[in-house]
Image (cartoon, rainbow, N blue to C red; front, side, top):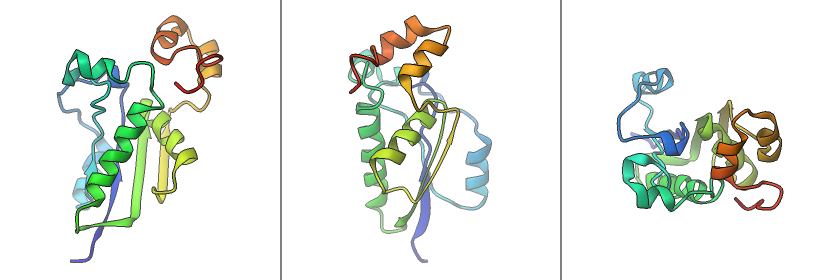
Length: 147
């Protein structure tokens, strides 16, 4: 059998993601078509991996979670049955933010779909009612751009 395409699906704000599975209609479509996919569970920030792992990525939403996403992709593509020239990235919400980030930082994904992801954290923080919460997790985008 020739190597198959694959996709990665980062999603959900990582500090809200526990270890429980979530149902996703798009995942069902991929499974029905026997398409492998990687579910990024952000070890850097997910509450499902404990406080220390969560703190490891706090304030680095574009840093450590992005590096985790790339590491997951690299590990998956080390398999012989996956084609590294046919990779996709599908992200929603925080996963959409990471998909947007990946679109600007790497060419390893041949197709990227983003939904409800942010492009501009500074603009987002001035438009949201939850600016105090997001300032805590993202930092101040005017003075801490690397975060």
